[in-house]
Image 1 (cartoon, helix red, strand yellow):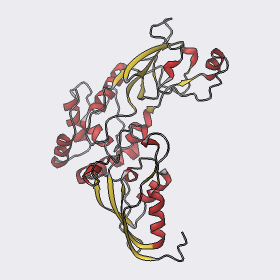
Image 2 (image 1 turned 135 degrees about the vertical axis):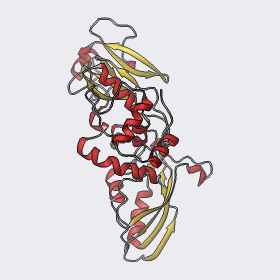
Image 3 (image 1 turned 45 degrees about the vertical axis):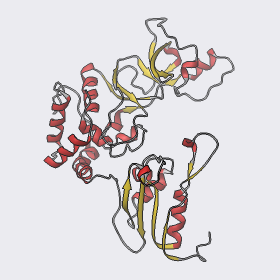
Image 4 (image 1 turned 60 degrees about the vertical axis):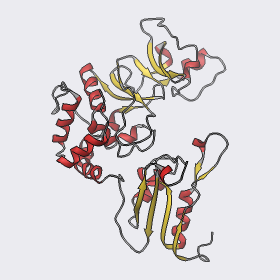
Length: 340
């Protein structure tokens, strides 16, 4: 498009949002970002309705483009709806839909970290500095374990595998046994036919460099729910030393004691932690980056939080620690489902 020939004062529209590809809809490539860029070139003012995933730096649009949009001082959000079917009948757009307004001659300030709830914005402001200074759970989250490819490819002559990751389908290899062959075998958590299962494997096939394999950790699904604020996390559990996991899961922590792991498990189940997770988790994806605004805690007995208490009592301590007011606490208690 030659923007020297086309100039408009205002553009209002609903650009196509994806390019269909062979295979499942999950592989469809977003193109609305390209239309938005072109519209901004040819018009001073643009009002567009598009998928809203980019507001949370989520989805398949380029991360650099997402960040550019979130730091654009000329752009603001006029409307956001999580349930796309309320806007477009019988249409499921993960992450919702949004109406954005851009005026190149006005400064609205950066969108920054976007949330649809004023109360959550308020809570985030109180938590943000602690996260910047002390870190978040993202800092201690480990992705799936990895193969020792030298040993694997030597065992399976001609395999020549180059991907080290324990993908979700790795139990197809017969080195993974339903029963323990040796007391030294590692126990690997995975999924077969949508059911969680454990398989045992000789430790020589697993790379134990820079992992939490020898420590306690909290295991939970890498994909969970729909992205609705306050939804439960599907059956998190404590993984003991010498328990690993496939790409279906993530692991929080590399703790020396069961007490720390149990404390972290309670934290993950707390309403406070899950409302902070909801700042960025707006789809089913539960990767480490989504935990960016969940503050890191001291999970030992020396912590400023008494982890021996019930989850409800731990929440009360966390509300006090971060100075939440009555309205913010009511918002969390109302919006976030309880977990036992």
